Image (cartoon, one colour):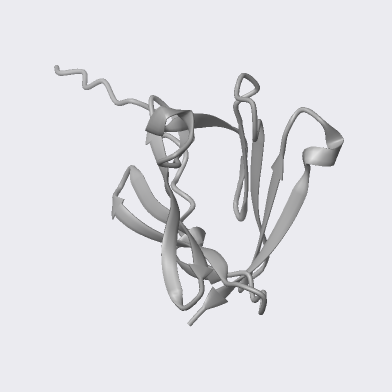
Length: 140
């Protein structure tokens, strides 16, 4: 008789993030684009429109590893170009909370699907005045 060890499946990637999201801000576009790379990785980009040119502000990713979900953000001119990791502390369909209390700012990032085509991203730090919520809308 053979015994096969199976590891518990980890949390699922938030495929509901896939696609392009825009703020709808007429003063200047910003948003995110997410795409699935494989069963354990979503890759994304944080974008901003300067003049008539779209710029990548940050490279972002969400991935599963050892039964947990992580969010990574890399901004070229910050943190010596290193990726900063945040671990998911809350996972529910349409709602994710990532935290890294040791990082200067942000320390907490929340993604919440407020409606099928409305995404709220809350970014906060150690002080209450550092908190801001950005509403983004699915771009078709």
